[in-house]
Image 1 (cartoon, rainbow, N blue to C red):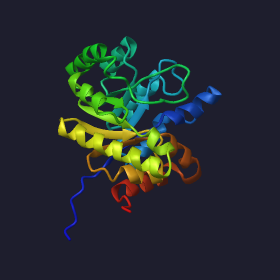
Image 2 (cartoon, rainbow, N blue to C red):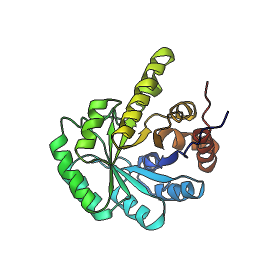
Image 3 (cartoon, rainbow, N blue to C red):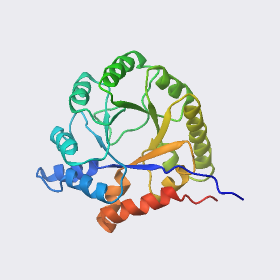
Image 4 (tube, rainbow, N blue to C red):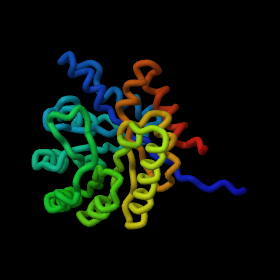
Length: 248
């Protein structure tokens, strides 16, 4: 049987939690920009950062330095606010991923309600596109939300995989099917499909089986595991896993 051609899935490495460790002591070590440089040398396809309103990890200067010191595409996760819009327009990352954000959350809890916020999103996206910046919207595996993301002008949707990662057995299988169907739908209506949140070696391998997904963005697991294995080793292992997912 002829093997089906499979396009390489890109790996975006989120370095937020290098900054979390740095900020815990209020110093300058470890430096997230240094980790981005290591990720670049280790085969990462992009760097993702989330510049939060409260600057709990990544700060404005990190973004400025990244623009100057790495050649990889920068994916800036941001809330749909005027402050963040101004920063995106000024710094001009390769792509912006619009995400929901709540002060009290530990991490992003789910996808953005695009339907509810479509008016403000359309306005923000139009301004970002004027600067030739790609726009992604972080959404749950919901076709109506994906359809609305297309309507407001997004180029890409990133499907929230947190629910999939936290479920087991048949519940996980059902969530996988849901994500797969949404990825197919996104491709059908002309949106590039990415995925991320909560992924580790096992779950990234599973999600990589969905051929419509072109990029995975992974942060917490890669940074956490790198304490034990080293960042280059973890990135190379993750790249190998998503390039050759195990089909059961």
